[in-house]
Picture 1 (cartoon, rainbow, N blue to C red):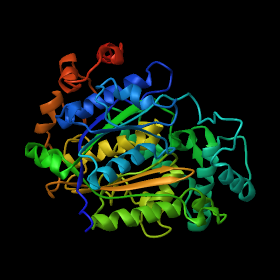
Picture 2: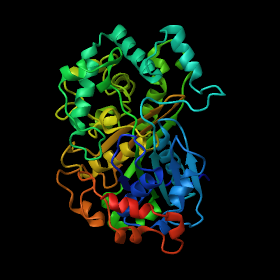
Picture 3: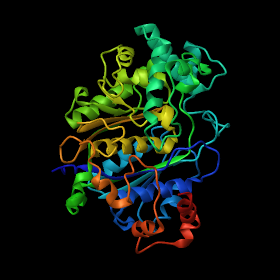
Picture 4: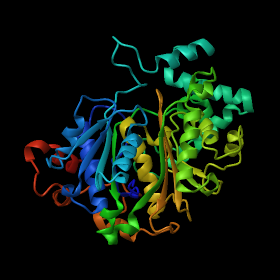
Length: 455
């Protein structure tokens, strides 16, 4: 008889600050800092981890081993994942699949990215870009300009939404205004400035209707999460209060409609809708239950079409949801309380895991300076063109709603509340969670010294 899948939980999370890519911090430090924080949060040692998953897009093969060997050389399998902008969530999906299948009990997923300034680049000039057919479809239907390619693609989706449903440029600007306002309360955000709607609309035009303040930046950053089984958690009952259940999840790729000549379809609308419906059905919840959501707002236009694709609004009514104030505190659903990609930043391999961390803190009740109160479920959407999307439903393991100010346990492992303070750790804390039986000072090099000195 087939085995009943194990439940999979997020037990620990960790983040670095997201920063401008200026070559000042290496991926070895970003991955190390995020991983140590996640181990501390989970209150476990690296010797408890039986698989590692490294998530990054820009880097040579086995960058994951370089990062994970700093925690210990315990001979566990380490996988290196690249799935464009959905890389981090793809790593979480792989971890959950392994746990649910009974293959592993504790998996550390670390996402990191050291990027280049400016818009995204293609490095392999002697072969076809995997999104080339999408680019050709855009050329065939809307033409091309010298604006960044991604801005054109998502901007065209925004234009189509205006043409079909009556959205206006100010609606897209309002999305960005809200995300920038949210980021002011996230200590990990790359940008924490607050702007008026007028300032957003009058910032330099990148590709209409998108202005500069409606486009996410490239970023350096790291994020980590620890995924564990029910059996692992059962042996540590004192940690159940902080465990967050992955109640539903779907990794999906494009439907044939991606090439139906619609700019909205070209940006993965149908795979997002399929993934959302699948994940929500598995979790046995509906969109009416969702009051907090982290979604992939690489551009304000993508947030607009994604609100529709996730069915957080009536079909064609995403702009009305925005106008009614229903994407922020006091409205229907708080979207991107972290500030989203637009303001928090977008280090590709870390983005999906950073979204997870924000929702974990929300459900635990730790994010008390930006908390969406009284929620027990949360929704995450992470998209990569080419294409792949991961939609995840999280739920408190105790089936209770979060409580404002329920942060006493937040300080137990790191000495402060990581949801509202972007601080570091001590050498003593590092030694507590690095492998006891298979650590190597040669493998860690000067990373520990650099990371600790930063704080």
